[in-house]
Amino acid sequence: MEMNRRDFLRGTAWMGATAALSGCVAHAAKMVDAGGMTAFRVAPIETVRVGVVGLGMRGPGAVHRLASIPGVRVDALCDLYPERVAAQQKWLADNGKPAAREYSGEEGWRDMCQSDLDLVYVVTPWQLHAKIGLYAMECGKHAAIEVPSAMNLEECWALVETAERTGRHCMQLENCCYGEVEMLTLNLVRQGMLGELVHGEGAYIHDLRELNYMDPSLGSYQDYWRLRWNAAHTGNIYPTHGLLPIMQAMNINRGDRFDYLTCVASAQVGMDAYARVKFGEDSWQAKLHPAHGDMSTTVIRTVKGRTIMVQHDVTSPRPYTRINLVSGTMGILRDYPLQIALASKPGEGAHGWFDAAKTNEIREQYRHPLWKVAGELAVKMGGHGGMDFLMDLRLAYCLQNGLPLDMDVYDLAASCSLCEYCERSATNRGASQDVADFTRGGWQTAKPLGIESVDLKKLGITIDDVNEDKTQLNV
Image (tube, rainbow, N blue to C red):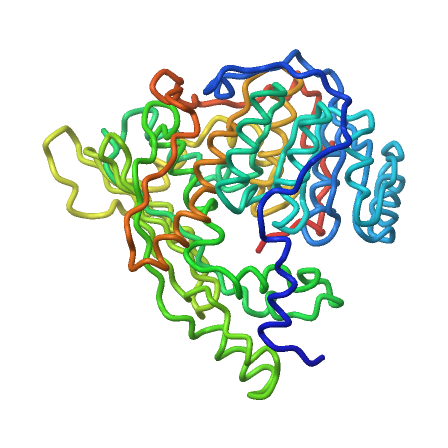
């Protein structure tokens, strides 16, 4: 396969502004006031009818998780390739689940969104996330969209305004907010154990070079879509995994908000080195020279004076980490490995990490109720240590019981806005960027996310109802 950088980047035309979304007239608008999506709820949905679009790497796992939750029915399956749809249809049949409607081809998702569904679950390549989510809401469906759900400010604002205008939920599928340590952190914060929060650090550091350059025919990113994004953009193209859990702990959009940020990026070395070794000096891969720096570091300051550092590195030979650090006036927690240090009372120091016994004692004492109730069940199912299943379980529970979602469209927009803001800053010598208030003032009165769980008896699910699913991703 002969290709040069110019040819390769011609495939990035889909990275532009949100396309016009016409053709769906199935939903009568229900306007929600600006900022009103934080506590937004809809009438309980007894049986949540879900359509899953995108059945490549992550989609099959989503189908299996959703279909395992009582009161959730996977009613529609959609993918560019009909054979992927057929494979999941077979899984549903083999596991005693009702057959789903089938959609495929370039525009199959449009027909799916117009069908009888409550929720459209988007697991496609990034360039389709906002486009499908917008169309789903226009068709009267709630939208749950993989990360990042929006790749630029235009898409962020479009999702916010469409959710408000149509009165439909629009949730980013940020599984890391349901990680055991992230939820432990949130519970410690809510119990006052860390005092007043001052600083946080999150990251996505994960060597993805093999997947980025893998031939798509072998099951990697279709048409090299993730490599294309790395080739065309810099800053931080994947900020949400480390960021959103800190946003929840710091009450971002619910008592505080992002004020401004600055981002700097290192030179790009790792991808070129990998491509030369793997494919040879004269290969199109070695001549591509992606724009994204190996390590990008962003520092955000909030209106109330807190700071958050967010890093991104998918090209260095480093062990995986999301850092997961939250620091306050009474102590600190950080992950990879989990370490905790707490002061005994205000004004005193904490000059050493607790030993393993004390750390485990705190971990057990302050384990988040959702993990206490459903953690064992989630781990059995699989999916990034169980957090994928807890995310879906909690989403379904909220829809079935008419509750506000844990993550709303403002959380989506604020976190995804970094994709554009970081690139602007990194390409302008780290120039400061003011961050938009997507709540338009709503953050000042919105209530913080509480310590929420599920009632498994009400759901009608036990650990015996869940089977280990080896198709779930854990990397």
